[in-house]
Image (tube, rainbow, N blue to C red; front, side):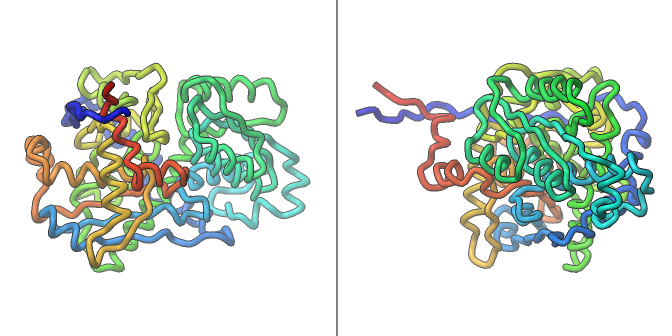
Length: 418
C-alpha cells in the first residue's frame, strides 16, 4: 500500500513593486469613476442583477491581528457563481451599442434587446477562450442578449465547467492547448467567421477596445464593495489583495481604488499562482517589460493559469500596485478551508480555488514567521483594513469537495512512497 511522505512545500515568493513608471495617470484613466458607473448602470438594468454580499470577518480579524477583513463574495453573481460575467456582458453590450449607435450613457439591457434593435443588428458570434468562468459569462451574456457564443477551453479544463458553458447554449470544447494558445485559436477561428467578434479579457497590439470594456465591467464589483463598506460604517481599506491571471481584474480593481481614493489610495497587492506568475517575474526582472510564462501551467488555480499579461493591465499595475506575490496551490487551499469553515460569528463564504488564494495569503502573512518580511514591507498590522475578492464559488463542485473533504491538494507538496 502506498503512503504519503511529506516533502518541503514550495514557499511564497514576493517582490515589492519597483518597476519603472510610465504614464501614471493615463494608465488607469479608462477606469475612472464615470466609466465604472456606466458599467454598473448597465449591469443593474438586467432583471437578474443583485449586489453580491460583502462579508465581514470579525473573529478572523482578532485571530490574525489586523483591524478589519472584508470579503466580496462573487459566488452570487447573476447565478453564475463567478464575477467574470461582469466583463463579458459589458463588452458585448458596448459592442452592440457601438454597432447600432446607442450612446454609452443610454446603454441598458432593454435598449439592446428590443425587436427593433435585433432586426437592425442581426446575429453575431462571440468567440473566446477560457478555463471556465469567463467563457460561461460570455455564453450567458450572448444568450441573454440573443446572440451566439463559441468557447475554447485549454487542456486540463474541468468537464464540470465545460458542461456549465454548454448549458448556456454555447458551442464549447476542450482543446489540447494551454490557455494562451487557446486565445490564439479563438482569435484565428473568429477571423475566419463572418459577423463574429473576439471577447477576451486580455489585450494585445491592435486589440484593446473590448479588453478595455471588460475591465470597466469588472469595476462594478469594486464600486459595489466601496458602497457596501460605506453602508457598514467602515473606513476605506488600507490594503486590497487581488488575483491576477492576465491581470484584467487586478488592474480594474487597482484603477478603481486609485481613482476613488485619489488622496490616500489603498495598497494593492497582486496575487498569482506560482505556475503562472508572469507579473511577479516581470517585477523581479525590474526593467518595466512584461515577462511570459509558458508550458502547461498545472495549478489548482485554473482561473489564474495564464502566462501572458494583458498589456493594458500591465501598465496599470506596474504604475500603481504595491507588490506582486507568487503563491503555491497550498495557499489557495488554506483560503478555501478558512472561508468554508469560518470561526464562530463569521460569515461562511463558499470560495473556489482561484477565489480563495488571497484570503489564504493574508492568513499566512499574518501568522507565518516565514512571511514576516512581507508583512513588514506591506505595513500590515492592527490598524490595517483588508479587502479581498472571492472571485468564484465552487465552480467545479467535485474538485471543491476533493480539496476541502479529501485533502486532494496534498499532491501538490506530498509524494507517494513505495
